[in-house]
Amino acid sequence: MNKTLRKAVIAGNWKMNKNRKEAKALIEEMKPLVAGADCGVVICVPYTNLETALQATEGTNIKVGAENCHWAKSGAFTGEISADMLTEMGVEYVVIGHSERRQYFGETDATVNQRVRAALDAGLNVILCVGELLEQREQGITEEVCGMQTKVALGGVSKEELKKIIIAYEPVWAIGTGKTATAQQANEVNHYIRTVVGGLYGQDAADAMTIQYGGSMNAGNAEELLAQPDVDGGLIGGASLKAADFSVIVKAASK
Ligand SMILES: O=C(CO)COP(=O)(O)O
Image 1 (tube, rainbow, N blue to C red):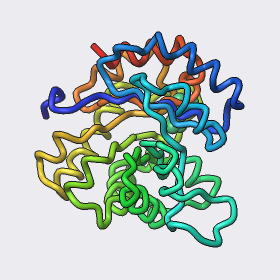
Image 2 (image 1 turned 180 degrees about the vertical axis):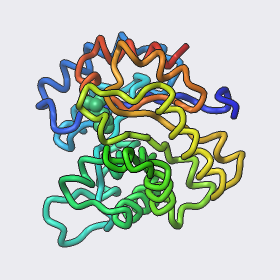
Image 3 (image 1 turned 90 degrees about the vertical axis):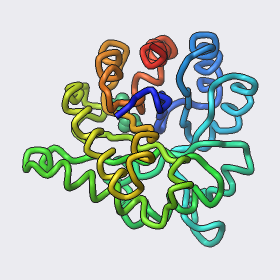
Image 4 (image 1 turned 90 degrees about the horizontal axis):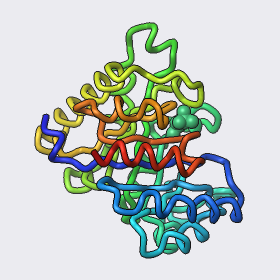
């Protein structure tokens, strides 16, 4: 595995936080701190902040993402947003299959796959989230769970399209809990996911794939996690809401 083949990406997932005024202030504070980063920098924000984020990041190295999109192009799906609506605005990334969507909103591997397909068809870059529950880790089925989520999500995705996908390994028990996977645990599962991708698409595709870790990554533990050979960046929740903390993580990924 050659880490130099791939680019680290640090993505913030703001979840359901920040109104427009707060979003603008956070981005303005963040901009000078992450300028010149030697890694990809993405902020995934609530739909209501997309326009604000796109305007505030114009001409900078910060890319803007949404936190989900629907699988249909349009139609009677009250409360949903299509991938085309996002690209039309200038949004470049979308998070799909986050564990909070799976846990609280009935997202399944099958609907995650449909949303991935729709996002790719619209030209979006996808941050695809996979990860096991605590009881699954305790049962020793972490690899089976993450492997299955990865395989189903990538159904019908071509090798060329795969270049637009980042996978984020997010153990559910580490999200928002302050309980981070150890660097070794993160690396082991990231490595396993890369093996699964290799089985589907070949070693070259697996070597080129950016696989992030997410789950209580913060300014204090980022350096160790990001130094792992199979950890190519992070998907950051809580710590992405503070410009100083987020920029420390971005700097750790730029080393
Ligand atoms: O879910 C996450 C990112 O998508 C991780 O959240 P925390 O960094 O708050 O644990």
